[in-house]
Length: 232
Image (cartoon, rainbow, N blue to C red; front, side, top):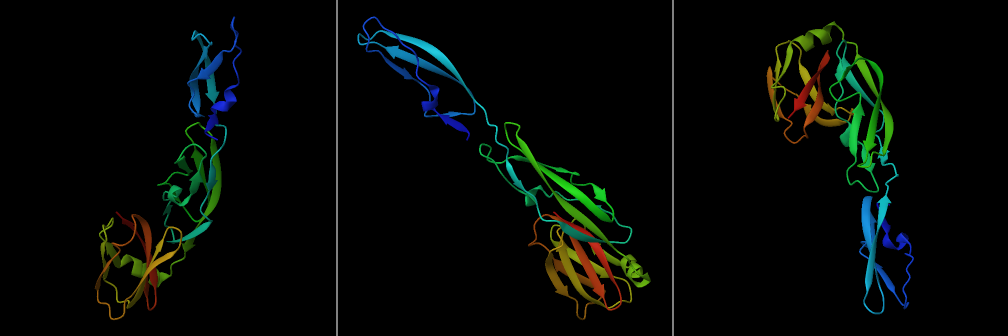
């Protein structure tokens, strides 16, 4: 708990030559975490008073609770690195005293990793310095591109990047494009766009998507490629 009831203060020892004295204090009903000075006042039947002080220290010794995102897999083109995003927004943290524990991530957002598994550690810390951590695995899957895929990748442009929402896909190859698939950093498919009868230039919007990094897979009849975009 973050507070202790003032009933836990105990009872002071008082004496009076006539007896019948009454002790009171100015403590709040619930004493918060930290140091609180309580003033006790004793009053006898004649109205005479005496005071003393009591120091109460309430310590928060309870760690936050924390749930990490599930393990996830992302795809990148052969030879590309994956830039780790900020996953703290996908973690769920709670604490008995701190409404919003501070979340940190290791490796930090912006770190680039290659193919394989990387362990991501998220730590939650409350205002009293209590902390707890959880981990999940990020697996980067490298898509091996064939000659046609590499040729398509070199002849496909997706701009502007970063974008506020509107995007232009420019195809300078002879490949007939069939579809665009947009996934988030967790590998979830967010949007699919069919490209039947698409020309060399296709305009589309991701204005409804949240800010962050997304992967755009561009499929043709004989090849495909993946582009990374940042939504501002």
